[in-house]
Length: 117
Figure: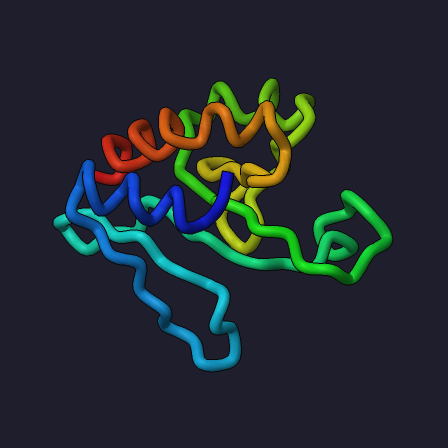
């Protein structure tokens, strides 16, 4: 799964365009729903920072809002991590180059936009 595939999906499904809010982090894109609330954040973060590798190469991740009761179970699965720079109680990180997480990215985006509506 690539960030471009995510951006195409949210544009087609929700009319959302990514917003790049931070000059210091040009690879960080915010996804907002119609009420202005964030429902997703796409970032490029060093794999070492995420604790998934010792590499400093960036990995694309998607952070979405998720039902609280699902987060603990999901973070035990490959490709899912506690939220990066968001509330770990309500958000979860999907590693986009992990096939298991990538396969579910669109359904997580759908759920997140509903949870933030």
